[in-house]
Amino acid sequence: MKRIALWTCWWFLVFSFNARAALVKAILEKLQEKSANLHTLEAHFTQDTLVVTGLMRKKHMEGMMRLKRPQMMRWDYLAPQRYHVISDGKKIWFYDEDQNQVMIGKIDKFFDKQLLCSLFLDIKNITKFFEISLKEEKEIFSLELTPTQAHIGAKQILVKVRKSDYQIIEIKFTDFYGNQNTIRLSRFVYNKPFKDSLFRFSPPKNKKVEIIHLP
Image 1 (tube, rainbow, N blue to C red):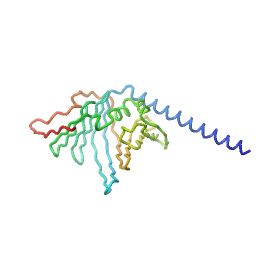
Image 2: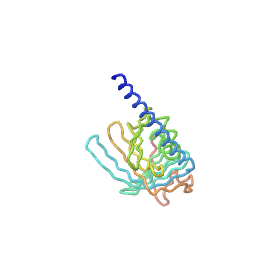
Image 3: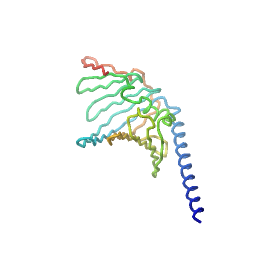
Image 4: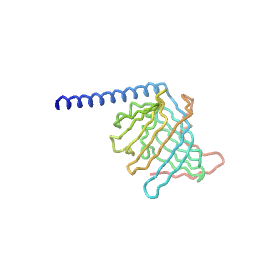
């Protein structure tokens, strides 16, 4: 009887694992199918940052996000301060309007440039870099991404996907110290035409901007 019970438990665990793996694969296929016809994406975002190292600090920001294939991105923070993160896939610009200062560097030194664009425009790529597990809520799939490569500067990434239309609506990054960045997305606009110049920084006219070249 004990052998039968152990066999039943083992079979049930294997079945459950295979079922979960199949569901994760199906979700990724749906996300890939949705993104296949996307060339650009625009969305409003809020970002809540929790820093637990040292004195605990919280910060809330919001703005507009724009992505364009293959690896262009622009994050315009509009409140409580105006700050811009812009990349053409090679260079990255950090422009602080209040300080009237822009820092310029190579994106590879600051971000995994493929990660954010892959999540929205080519999600099949994430299987190369993450182990994926699933938690299911009433209206949401939550994908837990655990990096398999050291160069990705996160301990875990939680991606929430709306079941009704397979739209990613929230991404939560947790680093190795426990600090968290949670980005929530809304007001999606698909395939809006964007010129490539939008993803390169140009100083405002009649305004002298301090330029700092990052190593």
